[in-house]
Length: 221
Image (tube, rainbow, N blue to C red; front, top):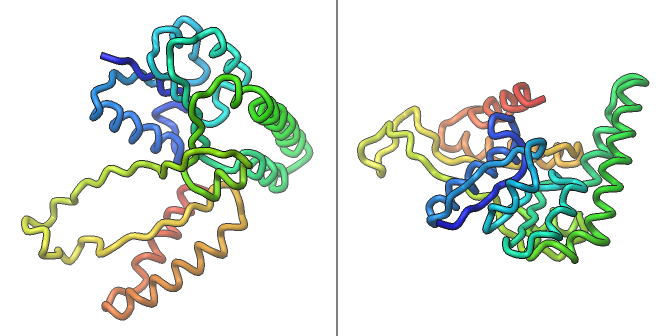
């Protein structure tokens, strides 16, 4: 059985990248691969050399990615989940205090150096495929990547035995707009929530989506 090493954040961490990696792992398993989830800090050359496919999420390997030059056997995939430089610039802009601003500045310089190295050397020299989860992320990062949206596994709530009959507590439909770390997407989110709520009110549902979204923001931010 072929072995896929999925490299990135911890499976217990919160956020869209971890959830995307979880769904990627499920899909790889459905395709018959043996999936090994490798946290970035635990990635080692001895582990990577056992893989048939190395799937790196974001800049998780950073300069460790130079190890991949020595590995000719595995196929290497780099997936970009966000706006690499925009997100660290936003963190710098909203940093609190002198110490927080200093840490954010160091991280901005660090990420910028790693991204320049990836753009100039690693992407061309190492990776067989570069993918992005949306066209806007490929365009914002200035890469020519294959766009593969985040996988989503649908699970029925099981509230209704007949799928054509809606239970009063079931969700009619869901919309999702990612704000990520960029504040510029918040007006879009507000507009989407407003328009969807207007349509929900015509169905007799009041502020259901609005409450759900605001609760999500309270938990996340």
